[in-house]
Amino acid sequence: MEAETCGTAAVYVSEVLRALGNALQAPPTVWFKESSQKNLRSRDFLVPRGALRKSFPDGEVPAELILTLLSLDAPDLPPLRQCLQCDAGLVVQLDRPALFYRVLRDFAPYLKPLPSADHGQDIVILNCAPLHSAKSLDALRLSHLRAALLADHLAEVLTLNGKHVYPVPAVPSKEVEEFLSQLGISWPSSGDTSLVEETVSSFKDFLRDCVQNAGDGNHTQSPDEIRVQLKTSAEKHNLTLEGYAPNLDFFLVSEDDLRHVARLQRSVQDLVQTSPCTVLHIISCEEEFHQQKLDLLWRLMVPSSRDVTQKHLICGPVKVLNSTAPPSSSQYFQLRKSQMLEASVMKYGESVKGDSWDEIITSLTSAAVKFELMATPHRSQVNLNLEDGNITTKGTKSGAFVMYNCARLATMFDSYNDAASEGIYPEFPPAGDLSYSSLREEVCKFLVGLSMDFSCYYNRVHILGEPLPHLFSQMFARLRLMKGVQSVLHSALKTLHITPLTQI
Image (cartoon, rainbow, N blue to C red; front, side, top):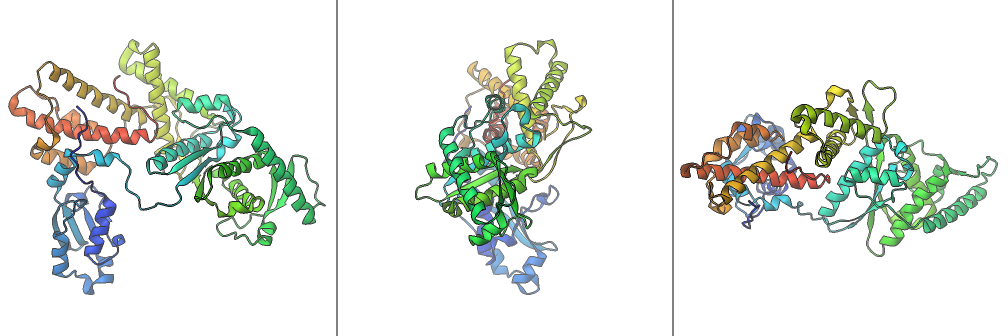
């Protein structure tokens, strides 16, 4: 059973908000997409009463505008069931059965990136700052791993959205490269070190001349570090300091700092001809201030870099609970892997052994680590509980839980295909020929909850029913719903470089 396309236009929330705003003669920002499970029972979109008062006397929307909203009709808009005013404001409820039919008969558009009106800034140099100093596996801290996972995810998402992404730096250590590869992170592993060192040498000469000309030679300069007055130099070159930390001043520049900047400069020189580019720095929070110094230092040393847009994405800290000596990234992965193995043995018994099971355990561990470090908003702190009893394959935030459900879905479709090949079930009909009316109540309950806990649905509903003709219509509709869930889930996991399990 393969995902089927019927050429239906996709419905995007952003386009719905724009159309509703135009019809109401108000900006799209006055509309809110409802997300509360309680409120979704009666509405999908809302303009709060307070926002209505800013556009209409006494907050009352004219009847003709409500009729205009109800008559909206376009290929990329969902059908509306009702539009009315209440104490909360102006509410819109979609014709959900019609919308579910439209989505389920062709969900292929939702597996593609959202269309973007941004046609500029197509080159993105993605700088994973912690990797510059990852000269050994022991040096790769948990906060560094979090930044690397986020950078890898962003590289995939930006590429899917049509950007030309170039990761920096090349991983400086073979063991770090192998460890990242185990997690599905594909990052450059080699670079032209001779050109980088030439650039470092020229940067040193430039900075020493600047120090000499600034009359700062009275300070003792280390052979490996050069003291630079960033603030004074920036003011001298009329560089704006807006957005930088106010206490950004003296900087003891090391060779490693110069190599960091040199790698960025070489990337810009190699990639940018006439097109503009953005350098996106992925930084752990403890290195945020240092990265600002490097940002400004680059602009000082290379005037052409001032035309390069630099953006900083800061990752919050990773705190290990009840631990005075946090493990390295490698130790953390191995601990989670041993716990995952133990949990799998408890669940599946002594059959958990051999190469195939080792592959499954590694895959489960990789997914668990990614979900554990990335489920929290990137600026917030991640709290890790590494106690033996904390590892679990349950709970919607568990990577292992998601992987188990991937395997269950794959097994279900394999069971159907095997039965169909034996003539027990008929071949799957075209999606456009299916009747979804039997799903009205159960789909509403399933989608209103909208959590990753779709296993509750196929635990409660026997999807592969008895091979009786009068039950086939409902079975096919349910299978189609699960195929949509599976396709969207696989598409999302791909952006995390997680390969879904097909069996356990």
